Amino acid sequence: MSTLLSLLAAGIVAGCGVASGGGVGTASRPVPLNGQPSPGMLSFFGVVELTAAGVGGLSGLWVSEDGKRLAAVSDIGERVEARLSYDPRGRLSSVSDLTVTPLTLETGAGRGKRMGDSEELARLPERAGGGWLVSFEREHRILRYPASPNGPEGKPERLPIPEALKDAPRNGGIEAMAALSDGRLLILEEGDDDGARERRGWIADALPGGVEQADRKDSGRKGGARGKDARIGWNRLTYRAAPGFRPAGAALLPDGGALVLERRASFLGGWGTRIVRLPASALKAGAVVEGEELASIEPPLPTDNYEGIAVRPVAGGETLIYLLSDDNFSPIQRSYLMMLALPANGKEEARESALSGRRSAL
Image (cartoon, rainbow, N blue to C red; front, side, top):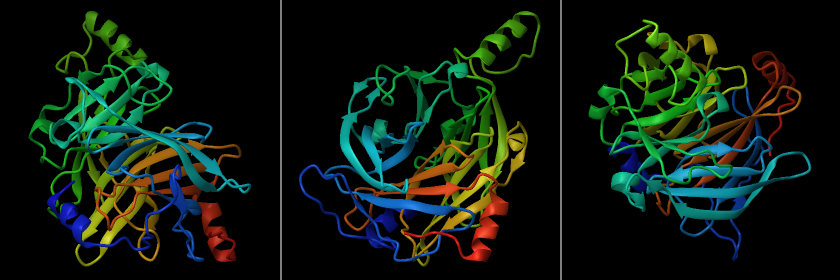
């Protein structure tokens, strides 16, 4: 997170901030939208504020296939787990049974910014060997954790990262990361807050232990492609964000594409968020990728420092999208969990709903 974001954390109140509160055992409270229309091609399916004492700085996000559990990581080296509940209409209503434990790092369990500034979380598919990945800033790296149903736990191993990332800005490293369905890994660098639209990105051919990695090793013994990292072959691509925005999170879509969460921080405009869609065909080495905007979240909607994004497909082809905000442990920011829905046929259905006025808001 950049210096500007840190200053904003100290001086900007979220657009729809509500006071923290709740009794013992309460982990969330609903955030009313007061009839605000849903953004872009998406529909609102609920917003809650996490209110549990001591919970904050949340970044990477994962939600289980059945939507009942979440896992997240924080920028002080913590792992958060919780249970999600929904109302009879299927809208997000509450967060409960929330637990916070230290992430195990290479040097053992411990909390703190210097080595524990975790920014992104991804669960690996079986064809990539399973397990979890967590990316870190300050000490730029990716740690791989053993397979577990509850999020990243156990002793991790450190994965090789692109050589160029070792010189990334201290607070502008791997903010967005998605494990693709074919076993590859997409990472995007946040970079400096310099106004440039182009951001560096990489795609890994395959991860150690995955199906494609084994195939690539076999082809290498037969005189196949050379000149790449012995364990991971990183290929450059360029990600083009909207003016003033930078990538802050990523998630795999059911069709093999990806969503990217873009964030803007401005003294005049405050927090801004975009959700953009990247088609699977665009995720290739050497590409210049610019996503299709699905939604923009601006005041008076519940705005804050959204950094986590997760996706869950449901029956009928609809895709549920969850966003999580990082409150930077600031008393004037909020930890929001927002749920949105992308219709099965995306653009066409969303446009028809907007024209007919049938878009739902809480």
